[in-house]
Length: 414
Image (cartoon, rainbow, N blue to C red):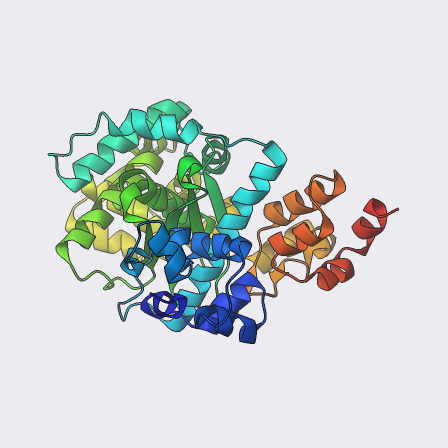
């Protein structure tokens, strides 16, 4: 089966694949049509990006020699055959997958060995889950086990402030970046060689609050924990994207996991007691306080109260209609928009990264996370990676790297 066929079955175009590899479109067309052989280094990157075995992308003769007479492009992780995914979604996730691959490669170059703490944690949690239970009960039990081992919700405080560092300390990759043209809200997949794979979580930060992003992170972690063999999961902004009972159950489990890790009933009641609040008599400022201190969005706070029968259907609807944006901004910096936050901290604090985070080798605009860019630049500064390798990791050409970071180039080339 030709490379072109694999790409077509993924719902992608050759131009998008060429861009994500940073190669000439005409050259990639020749690779895709079998007119020229793709170099092994590019095969490795494209396979990681698509989520297939590298041998699927090799010429037929090579695949046959390995006893693989039939490729299986249907295994492509994101299963982009449904109408729920637009061209922008496909191309955006292709770029995300490449960024996840790059982030993993960078950490391997800097640290020298993978952090496998997540694997021990996942196995410990999963061996205690009763798979005869309902999906929601599976998610909640896994969440309680996860929280016990990571001290989530301890001390009567929400875990929004600590969850990112805790996940990264376990070797889980976490990427937050805006995708303004895509409906993708978040996704989870595994990166790295088969012998050293690790989970990668992505959250689209475009027009989402910090409180919502916390829920998305833990929802995607639920997918990474339970759905390892699926190859990956994609969640969009649309509520009607699920068409089968199986998909719905998978989402119910991931959502139950997210709610229970971030806002278990005990934590919710503790926050109410600390603030002198009654779930059945909340004001706007009271609801805002619960959102701010739990670190999760209003919708999730209300849903958790309803799940535990602390409020009835009527109060659920009443609280859902509360507009608390102003109250929340007055008590939490996390509620500020990007522009409001920059105004608060000053333009100079944000200026150093202006125009230096945009990848240029992807069809869809991809703004790289500041921590990731910093890590790449630090690796160059310590001579861990070369300038050409840094440009590749930042998904820009080498000339652009020189123009964006002239001071660093001068420092390391003296």
